[in-house]
Image 1: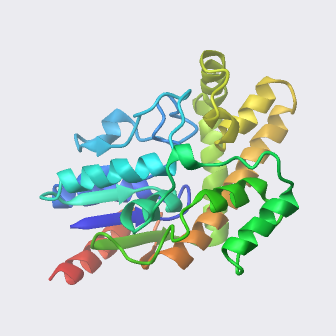
Image 2: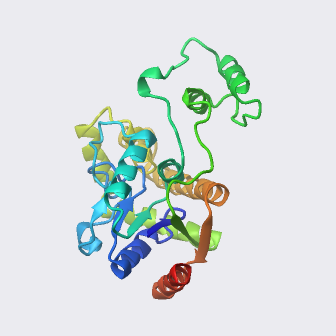
Length: 284
């Protein structure tokens, strides 16, 4: 059995994944694009060793911050793990929807050495190429990076055919409650040493792209460089985290066949029981 636990940032996915892995004697595969990096712990809300409760975790802490790890890499890695553990129950947990769909569906990518950077073309010219490839292309003409990624994919880069039989569990809650949880988590990260973590990583890996792109890290890096105040930095992390949660909802609701459960934060065991009852019925 393969179970995917998804949902927005800060909703309780990790806690549910541990409960499911214990119930079904399973292994856990990370599906968070930041948690694959070593040493990015506080800002990614990475599970601590003692919180794993002895359950095998995969695709956590597998690459150095100064290395680049792509969705193509993740696709290969997760499929290898699933195929090598086909006799076990597998719980995939995380909020990076594209990684999940690329790994579990028939996604195809161009080889790295065949990619072009289109550096000699304007945004309008790149957009024109995108329309030639797909007249229904919905990417904004000024979103250069996304257009380039689109052009570098195979013509039939994805279809709706799943490669595995997966039960998708989504955790959700009222938007205002979620935003409050996100804000509280950011405050806790600051108290737990996020600034010190980013400062250390920035000195050790000064050219690491992940520190320039990941929420929590990119904002703190600007603060360290004295570009913004601490108050502005914290507000930016909260704002960007909330916006990311909205994008996660949009992706999951449009791209995957998810059964959603409202989280009972006052009694999370109740949420676990609801999910287990659903899974038992599906497997009966």
